[in-house]
Image (tube, rainbow, N blue to C red; front, side, top):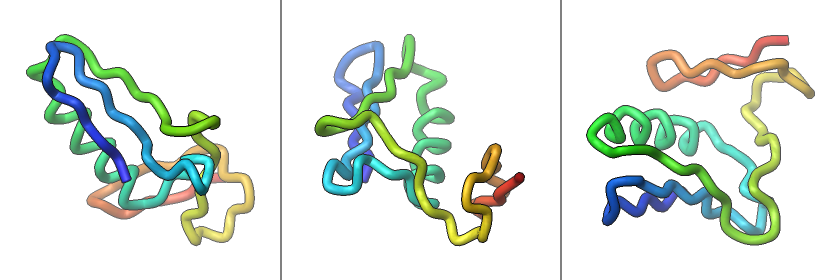
Length: 81
């Protein structure tokens, strides 16, 4: 769901769920975290989205309809109101 182009010094990570307006999933958050960690050797990291929409808030099964923020701890997404 996330494609990462590492061919240049500045990496490009593309959210690839255009049919869902690139809504983030828990796995996508984990993949973004891992990509950001790996990008320490890159000159920079650009985050973009496939399709018409960059991204839309995703569903994380946390019961918070509009969480103020999300944290990723040990691969588990936690919602905060």
